[in-house]
Image (tube, rainbow, N blue to C red; front, side, top):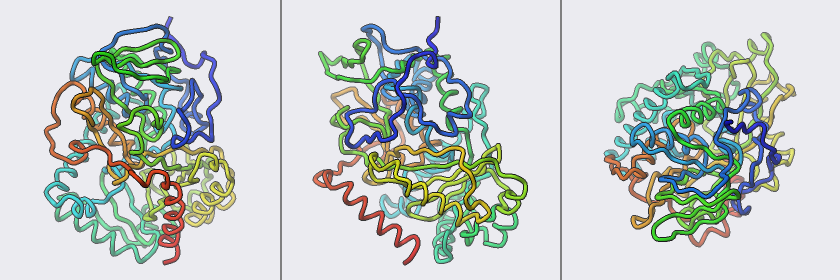
Length: 464
C-alpha cells in the first residue's frame, strides 16, 4: 500500500525555527499554515520515511522545487532514479511559503549590476540563461503533468517613489538596447487607468515574462511527476549523520542509513549549519512574511483598480511583492524579522498591513485569512550557484536564489542534474564555475550587520 503522508502522525510546524542557529529543521513537521497549503487540497502520495538501510545511486537532500526538479531531470535526461530525503513534509520550506511569483531573473541583481560585476559579454550570457530558464519553466507548467493555476501577463516593477522612475527608465533602455528584451515603461496615468491603482506607484517597468502560480500546487505536481518518472521521495527522513567510506556517502536517517554514490544539496534557506562544511556560512537566511486577505468584494476591487493577476514588485530595497489571487484575495509579502525568535512579533504584521494600506487605502483594516513567514536563501554576493565545490568529492548544490527561485529553481534543478550525472555545463558563467562565497570572519556579526542595514534600507526607501 503506498504511503500517504496525511495519515502519518506529524509534529506541528515550528514558527520560530531559525536555520542560522538551530541544528536542523526538525523531524516530520507539518507545513506552515499558508494560503497555498490551505487551498491546494490533500498532498499527493510520497514514498514515506526511510525504513531500512539502502544502497542508491544519487541522494537529493531537500524536496522543494529545486530538489524535485533535480529528480525530474535526472530521470528524464540521464536515466537516473534519485532518492529524495526530506526532513519534514514535502516542500516544507521555501517552496510552500513564497509569493508564487515567477520572473525572468535569479538572484537579487539587476542587469545593470550584472554588467558592473562581470562585464557586458558575461551579462548577456546570464540573460540568455534566465531566458532559457523561463522557457523551461513555461514548458513544465504548461505540460499535462503540472497543475498550478498559472496566470500570465508579465511582471510589473513599480516605482514606489517618483525619484525612482529615472532609474527604471535607464534599466528598461538597457534591457531593450543591450539585451534585446522588449520591456517598456508605463507612466502613472496609464498604470492606474489600465493595470493597477497602487497609490504609491509613480509608474512601472513592465517585463513581458512574468507568471503567477499556486506555490503548493506546483510543488505537489513536481512531486507527482518525479515519482511518475521513478524517483523516490522519502519524507520524515532528516539527515542526522553523514560520513564518507571508500568514496560512498553514508547518510543516517531515523529509519536507516542510505548509502549513495553522489549527494545533491537542495535545501536553500533551510540548510542546517552542520549539514556540510561546503555550505556552512555560505548563505544568509532572511525572513519574509506574507499575508492574504479575505476575498475582495466588487467595490473593493474597483477601488483598488487592479486589473491584472500578474506578479507586482515595488522598488524598495526591502521590497513588497504582491498580487491578486484567482479567488480575488490580495496577497502581499515583504521582509520581516531578523531572527526566528522574533518572527511572531506583531509589529512585523503591522508593518506589512501598513504597506498594503499605503498601496490600497480601501483595504485599511481588511480581515486577513492567512499570515505566515519563511526563510529566503540570500548568498553573500546576491547570486545563486549550481556547483560542485570539491572536484574530489561527489557533493553538489544549487541554492542562493535571493527570493527569485520560483522560476529559476526549475532550471537550477536541470543544471544540477547535469553535473550530478557527470556532464559539464557548457555555459561559462560565474554561477556555475565558482562556489557560494563565504561570509568569512564576518559570520558572527551577520545578524548585527543585518539589523543596521535594515535601518539604512528603510531610511533610503522611505525618507532619503
